[in-house]
Image (cartoon, rainbow, N blue to C red):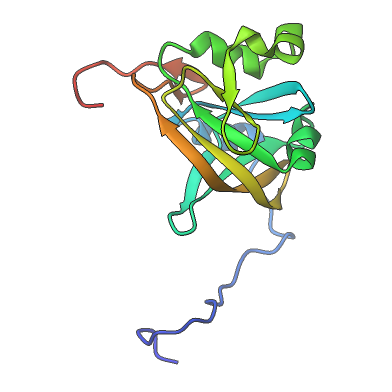
Length: 184
């Protein structure tokens, strides 16, 4: 079939095999830290217990249907709760929420027993939506994929909303705040 002809079939590609050597994790981490990301808190609940985790592996996947993905480390204490609940919300953090991000990245009692003392409400799925965020998506899990030492959760967006402020960013293993020059 010519390269420019239309087709609804999947494209065939050759991918590296598992026998090919992979780079060491330290250089890989150093390279990936050069990619600036936004910072989010993904949330779910187990009964009445609200749970959350700081996530920067978050992206939109599709506009129609509206799909997003998050990646959660398999060894995370909240991983099973996310998968078993079947839903999650992603809350995009403002530049004023660095301490909140650090709390949800910790293994503290504050995180697991008090939800980092953060106010939230539910939208469609029941996942906690933070009252103060730059934006949120409330999702039902469509699929879970193997992602090496992480699980990739694909979620269908059922509700969303926006707030005000500048984003909290993460670059070279540090939080950064954009200069408010009107560009954001």
